[in-house]
Length: 597
Image 1 (cartoon, rainbow, N blue to C red):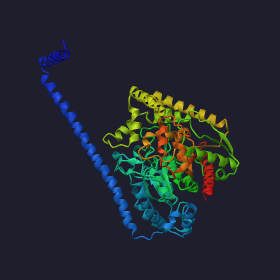
Image 2: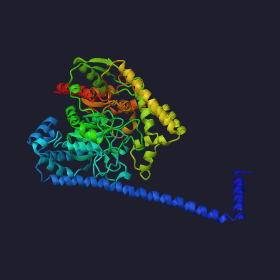
Image 3: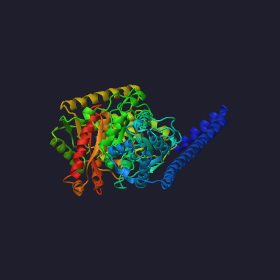
Image 4: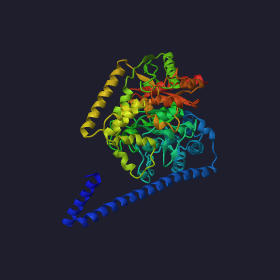
């Protein structure tokens, strides 16, 4: 009997059985219902997608409308543009003395922010209440003015602000306004700060790009073909363009440091628990993941700006609101100390070799610090960066097999490319291993290693991951302490700002920042140089930069056209030693500015 004859006989027997037991009509009805239900669900999902798309489009249009409304409003205001060129101490002194008002400063920064936004698309919302707040601050007598009195501050879109939603680029989170400020925003306001704009992010907050279907793509102020970095990319672009003097971002895998490097500003990722972040949209814990924590971090034009904010916020006001924060005030003695330090460094983390411009920056930093009397020791990063990326961060964040994002993406098919990378966590192991094998054949060993990390299938495996992470951290600390290091110098990324269409393909560059999140060490970046024509020439020459794997080849090709882009170095320290990290950053910043002059 052939295949079709066998199938025909099976159907005949099935119909005979159904008819004999009077089930034929029931079966037909069930089939009709099932078919109708399936078609109905398809129509329902399509309708929901269309509704969500309209909702996202409306939100994007609202953002543009509010920006244009502010533009019209500013036409009737006298703008003192010089204010936006002042450093934090000059601005602080002028506000405290009453030489300028909070309203004057706000209007100047609003005007500059709109100018920067025209080039970068960094603003997601205008905080209209800033005008009223500035006017109220202007009525305060001198003795009641806080340390941040009248200073405009920009906030990442996911930073909790009363009356605003935190969409993180997801349509499903539109129109869910918060009923209170995040704890850090409360402290900032209590010290006199004026939040005045919110800035762009990538969808899902797990990307080094800055693009979503609601607000569009942000662009680097130095080159519109280049990425701002992520996920605090809007903040970095706005500060680099001088549309803001100080901002708040958040960092899970480099999200304040990567954009700072790309855009040429400074930033600091504190130790988790030092600054607090309750009340924000937390990219690391949509599903309760707490092995690797997101931290809020300051972003500014220079180190002095970061220090000014931390001095103002690290105190009882924050500790009372968020008792789980560590009650450590800013350590002035540690920051201002002149004690020679033992400083470790590495130029490459043995995963992706940095391009010549980045290697030159790290070498310059090492020589500069050595000339200042510090002891410099070469550090072997072994495979710590690869393990941190693949075996711990990636695995921990996908412990729910992508369920956390499934709900947010249920009716949203317009997601940012990197979301797809994270969604691979819900694929069966055999599919992931097959993809990994394919990646390995294409010389993409890092992605292959990451995908070869199996899924977390039960609570026991999650607990084991927690134990493995503790052992990893202790092993790294032992390696660190064998050389009695105070801080570490390393690259923040293997190249300068990456082209917009490439960023999703080179996520492996994040190993340079992710290691400090997994270790829960404070880390900051400070710009020290710019890409030169000689750097580009060396990067494109196989004899000076022999690219060994896919990511290195992509970075190498991306060097074309990168002249003039900023290059930073990264400084990391032991937990709760933020002030020591900032001290070294300040020394490097001063030396770089001195040479530039």
